[in-house]
Length: 69
Image (cartoon, rainbow, N blue to C red; front, side, top):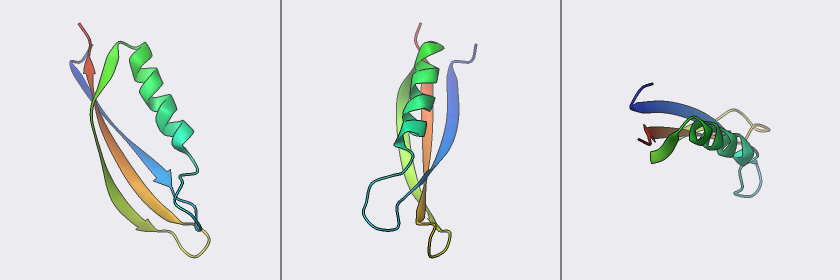
């Protein structure tokens, strides 16, 4: 097993409002890594821009997980 794992998830923002449509996907990634013996060490986000009028904005969440020994 690796000591660290880096994963990236794209979050799609609603066109109106500020809540993300797929926070459950982010939660699933975190929980799957926890099940494998990793903890979330660091998370950072960057704006990925818009995908058009109906698409809303994209946010890239980059997460570093550290294996718990």
